[in-house]
Image (tube, rainbow, N blue to C red; front, side, top):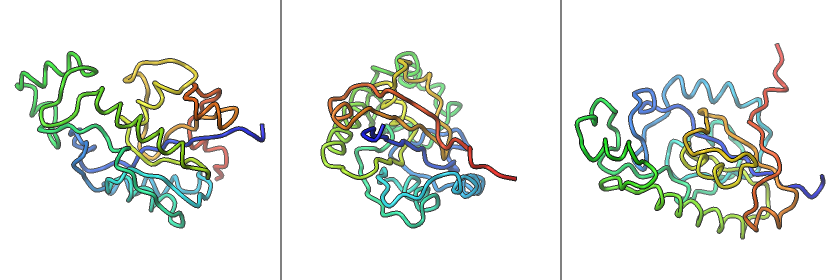
Length: 205
């Protein structure tokens, strides 16, 4: 097991826009009061990392600094959430009379978001960022990112094949993907083990 390689994928904390159930892609929203409390409560369940790779959007950077205050951060725009274009910051109730929005809901994996990205464009961006990261990185692999990015990577690499929207990703939590060796990871093979993080195994009192 000494040659195994683990990649930890974490979602940012709950934001004010998340509480409104608004679309939040390339625009940003600060962590809510509840979001900050949740992240600080989770901090003791994670190991100490020296370096964290993160989406360059402030909600991810803010979460990484709260969760891993002593870690160096490496920002990468490739791991941003999907760009929701004209729908950024708006809720379902605000968009339900928009025909293009309703068409997108019928076919979210193919339809174009006005002023934003289609899912194939988003997925290609994430894949390119992942390949560059895997080619260069030699330290522990930890990424603070967004639910959409994590789901896209799980569709591609999880040992159990599931559809994009079938993966649940909670704020401040995520998954650890484990490969038998670095070459298997870099060849783009599916990981051999997947587990939710944090495990809460060290919770006391």
